[in-house]
Length: 426
Image (cartoon, rainbow, N blue to C red; front, side, top):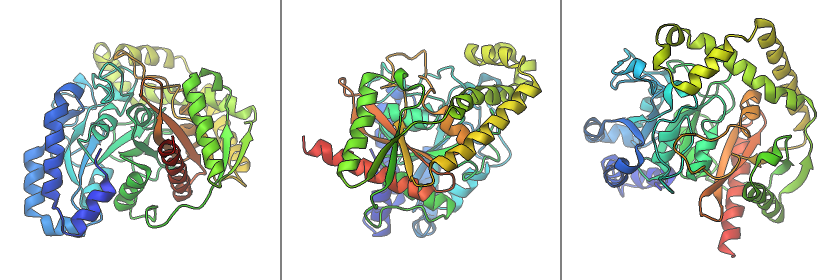
C-alpha cells in the first residue's frame, strides 16, 4: 500500500514530485484494476497535467499534490457522477461537492471516482477484494477501500450511513476513519439518510488517515509527531456480540489484551438496554429518510433500482412519522447515555464487522457492528493488522467520544502499534 504520510514527506523533502506519485498509482492501476474494478472513472491524463502545471503550488499545499479517489456519490464538476446507478448514467454535475472543493484547495489531485453500490445501499457493484478476488470488499464504499488496499491510491473518500466506511476498511485491511457527524461536509453528496450520512476517509494506516483528515479540514488531527499516550479503553460486547465469528471475537480480545499490556487502562463495560433500542432505531431512521431522499428514483425509476434497495423502500413506505419521531427520541437518549458512559473512558473497542470478508460477490456483508455507532455520531476508526486462518483481514473498531476525534485517532494508533509489535514478536 501507499503511505500518504510517507509520500507527502518525500515530496516536501524534494525526493519525489506529485507526478512521480501519480506514476506509482498508474502502475498499480495497470496491474490490478482489471481484476479489482475499483474505479467508476479514471482521469489520469488530466491528473498528470495538473501535477505538472501546478507542481510548485501543490507541493506547498497540505496534501502536497497527492492523488485522491472520490466515491461516486460526491458531485464533481469535471467528472461524471452516477451515484453508482444506471438512472444517472452520464450525469454531469455543474459544481463540485463541498468536500471535493476542500480536497482541491488542500492540494489534492482527484485521480478518479471510485465504484460504489447503487445509491449507496446493499446491492453489490462488482468490485473485488484485493486480498482474494472471490471475496467481497464490502460496501457501499467498495471501490475506495479496494483501491487503497491494492496500492492504487494513497487516500480515498467514502461515506457511511450504516457501516460503509468501517466495514470495507476491515474487509480490505486498511485504515478507515468515520469522523464525528458533520465534521466532513456532505453538501453536494447524494443523500440516503440525512440524519446518518457521514463522510469518511481511507488510507494505509491510522497515521495516514489522520494526516489526510488534518490536511483536508485544517484541523489539528495529525498524530504522527509523537508517540500516543496510553489510552483508557473499554471493551464492549454488545447484545450482538455472538454474531461475530470466533476469529473476530479472538481478534478484538487479543487487541484489548495487548493494549493493556502496553500500558492502556482496560476495563469491560456492559451497555444499558437503551443501546439495544437505539440499535433498532437506526433502521427506522435510515429507512424512513431513504424513502423520502430517494422519492424521485422510487416513483419514476423503480425498475432501475437494485432489488435490495427496492425491497427496503417498499417496506419503508409503511414507517409512520410517529415511529420515526420515536426512533429519533431514542437516538437522542442513547447519545446522552453514551456520553455519560464514556466520562472516564477515551475509547471503546469492538468488532469492525462480523468477521472477515465473506466469500461472495452477491453481498457486501453485514452492518451489525457499525450501525449503532453511526447513529451515535461518534468517531470510529478501523484498525487493521489482525487476520484469520485464511489470512484475510480482521478489523478492530475503535469508537471515540463525539467531537473528540483526535483522542480517538491517537488511541487507534496506540492499538495499531501494539498489534504490530505483537505480530513482530511471534
